[in-house]
Image (cartoon, rainbow, N blue to C red; front, side, top):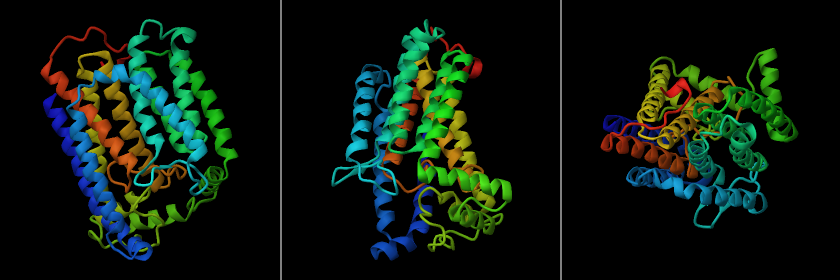
Length: 375
C-alpha cells in the first residue's frame, strides 16, 4: 500500500507539473493582452499549485477516520454555503458560482463534491443493514445527494450538478444499494436535469448545438472547432512546447476547460495518450487502495474520491474532442484554477492517507462491500 501511495503522489505531482507548463503556454498571450504581463495568469496558477501540494501533503498526514466525526457538521455547513451562494454570488457568464472574500474567491461546488463523498461513505457504513430498504436506508442517503445537487443546479451549474449525482450513484451502488432503486431514481433525476438544462439559456444552447452538429455534421461551437484544429495539428509528436497557435486567442480561454486541446497541439497524439495513461494509473491505484482498505468507510471513501477525479477527467477530454456537449469542467491537475485544484489535492491527500493507514495497520476487514466491484 505504501507503493500505491507513492504512485498516487507522483502521478498527481507530474500532472500538476505538466499543467504548469501548459498553462504558461496557453495563457501567455491572453495575459499579455488582458493584463499587460505574460506571467499574470501563470503566477496565479503557480501559487495555487504550491498551496495545492502543501494541502496534499498536509491531508495525507491526517488520519482519515477523523472525517466520520466531522461529516455531519460539514454537510450542513456546505448546504448553508451553497444556499448563500444563490443570494450573494456575483453573476458571471449567466451563473453565480463564486463567493468573493476580497483577498480570495472560491467555488462552493468544488468543496461540496468532496464533502458529499465523505458523508455518503459515512452513511453507507452506518446504514449498511437497512440500505436495501428504500424508506429507512436508501431514501436517507438520496436526500443529501439531491439537496447538494439541486443547490448546485440552481446556481446554475448543470454539468457539476449532474456529475455529482452520477458519482454519488456509483458510490451508492458499490456501497450496497439496490440496482432497481438506483435505476428508477436515476431515470427521474435524468428527466429533471434535462428539464432544468433546457430551461437555462446557455445550457440549452450548448445541448441544441451539439445535437445539431451530431445530426448534420460539423462542430458544436467555436471552442470545439478550434480545439479539434489544435488536436489535429499536433500530429503524432506535437509542434513543441510553447508553440501553440490556438493559444493566440483563437481558442477562447485555452488555459481552462479546453487546455487538453493545447496539450494535444504541443505534445501531439503521443503526449495526449501519456497524459490519459497517467489518469488511468491514478484510477487503478485508487481502486486498489479502495480494495485493500482496512474498513468499509476507507473503502468507500477511496472509491468515491478515485471516481470523482477520473470521471471529471474523462468528461473534460470528451468535451475537448467533441464527444459530449460543452460543460465548463476543468481538466484535473492541469487546467488553470483555484478552488478546484486545491480541493482536488485535498482529496488525493485523503486517498494517500488511506493507503498509508492500511500499510501501517494490516487488520482484517470485518465488513466488506457487498458489491463485487471492489472484491
